[in-house]
Length: 549
Ligand code: GLU
Image 1 (cartoon, rainbow, N blue to C red):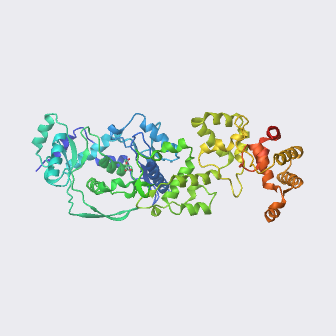
Image 2: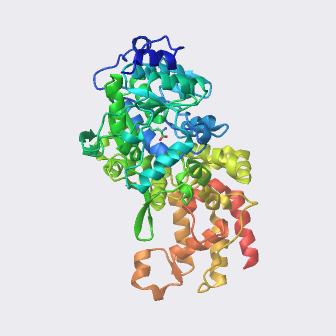
Image 3: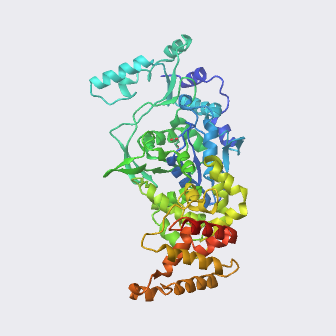
């Protein structure tokens, strides 16, 4: 019989703290019944993706709707994948998307009593539990070299056996303490492995809060707990951290489902109560006629940076993801157009176990609605912040006269049926460029069926009667009068009944003015446009047009 006591001391002589000490240091949180404690636990790979946001949003809603709390844990155990500055990129990326953490890693260090919140700073803690597992006979050192592992793999392939370090293949599983001592004395590097007692003949029943009732095969692999540098694997760190940080719900991608049986074994061996799990299906997109997972390599829209650069407001991405995550969100939004988004009752029960379809056209639609509900002030701030990074010229124009820019952006905003001109902030410049003289250009021509003399007469008469202090009714009455005086129908009904009796309609008369003043056939409400442009610009543009006629 292996003396596990001696082995534990041999491997972890420096560990003097015990699991009890850890329990005392990280006490059960004092939260109301039903409060969800969850976390985002991303790895700092330098790439923050939409999947991170989906996961974060789900956790965030569950925590904050239940009076619980959300924390950020940086899973930096894989030094090979880490790129410099990645933690900062990660934290800033999440901050930009307004994920509100109650504790965890921040730019300025850790905040909260359950830290450190960066796994590489928790090595001491993992070793307490590694030692415990060795003591319990549930973990052992394995000195296999890369070559030996490759050889095991090759032999398994030849025998058509299952792959992995288990059973008869687990050549260090039952070594004596003398052999282990000798290997250590020879300076051989080793990993610490879990001693699995599971069998693939057995199934475990498990209920995932998204996937429902599942039957999974037991784990028989002696997975690695600590790598040769003493740093834990994801699996071991997950069990220790989520226990000590008192996580009640783990929300993560369903790529972790295959290792869940191992995680449950670990929780049991460590004497921890496992959290509840929510495994989220992947984000997919249509590719021709078939669905496939969004891929980092093929799909730029997987990266969060894509949305900011494309000019999507954070709120649009957020509401779009809500639409994707909860099938009833859209109906709720239609019924509550002005309600703050966090008054929507998010439910993980409405999530699709198979994953969700990502559709950029739909995102644009949602975004148009979101932006249409924003105040001019808010739109101004958001556009300026976008333009600052992505369109210097636009930034200069907007900030040169903020009141003018806000007046432009206020057109068609605030009423029952707000205009929906913008899906992204990049749509703003082509929409409002005509308000700026140095950008203004007549880009649309008058349709050929109208006589130049009629157009000229409309412009002349308008100029003669235009008074910027008129209200919109009086302004329109004057245009109607011009129409009537030139044989254009001021009444659309009369025009439609007998178009041949008129030179055109009031709509054409307005269009003559529109092309002169905005340079285009389509524009927002002309009265509002003229109010913002001011009499001088309006008259100057009409004069310029008259010169060309
Ligand atoms: N670091 C893991 C990942 O990025 C976290 C999974 C989890 O949330 O437990 O996939």
